[in-house]
Image (cartoon, rainbow, N blue to C red; front, side):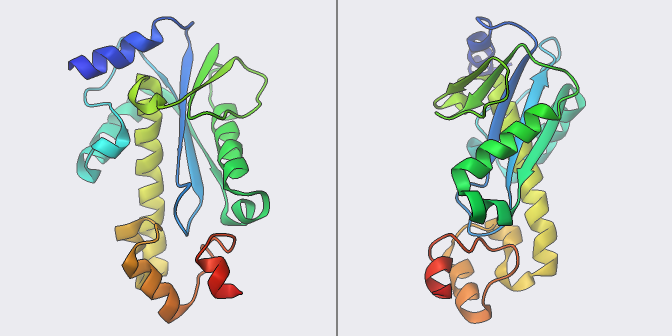
Length: 201
């Protein structure tokens, strides 16, 4: 285990166990749901390679995500495109986190959430800015959330191949924006998001 992983573990020693780390992915894309994950790691059996998911290749991420899921208690929560458009992306992200935490098979004594906002769930919960590179449990949550969402978007790419969701995961790349202009939007596009809102109006 590297120094970075040791520091991520060390950060959590000040908190009671069982501890859950929570992170979400998919706030920025123009298409697809927002996905949150909650993870309670087995601190005696932590997989190698856990760090901020943005610093891991897709191939490595899938492998590490599987190791995390084999050696932890975890759950996913999601918020649909309809919910995102109705209640806004921040509230939808908090809702996805709430669903993930409430789906855990074990009740944590404390929940660490990446960011500056946290859902109201009636548990001891602490938002941590930059938590995915401070807390190993949040980092683990970020990995399995991103891997899970990437696989969802891969499935959507088979239904809507013109948008190359397998490549862009719904983010507003130049290629994706050109596809929207050429083919219009799909049921999984977020109508409240610019530039889609501008196109529709």
